[in-house]
Image 1 (spheres, rainbow, N blue to C red):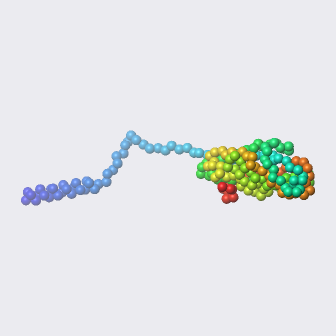
Image 2 (image 1 turned 90 degrees about the vertical axis):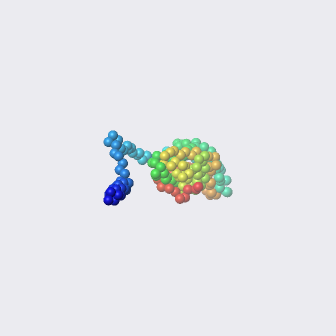
Length: 196
């Protein structure tokens, strides 16, 4: 009888230990510790076209234009009519790396002098990543992918000596200074036409 009681007590003890083993372990709460949050906000900046270049080309003569047309090399930014804007193209973008896309288009009007109008084609070459052919139609000359601004920087490109103006064979040419207007348009959308 004593052995039976001892065995029953042993089994009860083992069962109790089993229940203790299966109980979930609860983390102790430190009454002397606490958690909180720190926060600040970053405001969106702006996308701006800060500078566009002026182009002065070497001259030509009536015979050349009438008989064959001309390719005129870029010389500098010194012009007779109007005020120079310099030789550099500059874009600033501080909108943030989550919205880095931008594209810069350029187009050029006809060159005019008195009664003569000549349609030219500008081959734009720079010491940076901006490049393209500028005509009467909008065309992309630069974008964020080539400029590597990533929504947080400035990109600058200076006009290089490889820049030139192509003029077609033209009849009825008058002498003097010819001028054309260039229009530069910066947009906050990516381009699918810019050269790689």
